[in-house]
Length: 176
Image 1 (cartoon, rainbow, N blue to C red):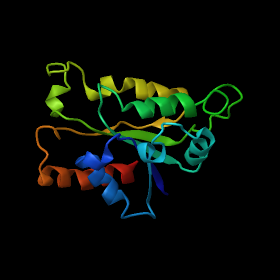
Image 2: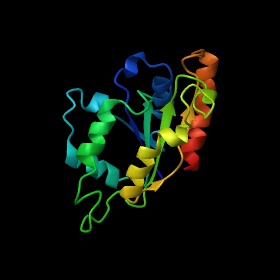
Image 3: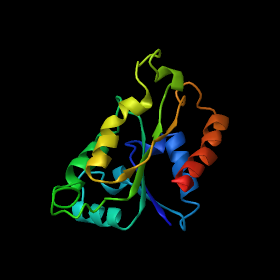
Image 4: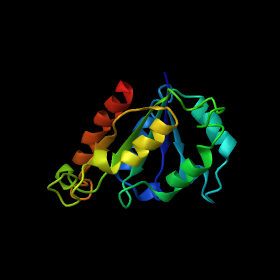
């Protein structure tokens, strides 16, 4: 079963790890479809019906992005607002078109995992911080799975650290 990866990075060309993940995913077109929102919509004018049809075509969906201000890049929020509409994604007569689909997040975080803990710099775990995503997917009756988070890219951007993430990420997707 093919997986749709919706990659959301406003500067993918400058990314180290997200760009590397996309390069690897593109080696397996029989397994993964990569849809880069900022590439598809540089003007940020989202084609809602096209996006809805894309979602309807896959049973496994990953939203891949770097952690921005304790959330996602802004185009993903806009995508949620414009694509997950009443009458399509939710509502008594919607048919919950994303319902039952396995959905998760793949996040790159700058600091180490310890920073995202009760005693860490940010006082909350990544699970707690990403709860609005979980609630969104629960609301549309999707089958939300815990996120894949790769920590520490800000403190270690070595090729070795980045390459270590690649098989971990692919294994996460394949286990979805």
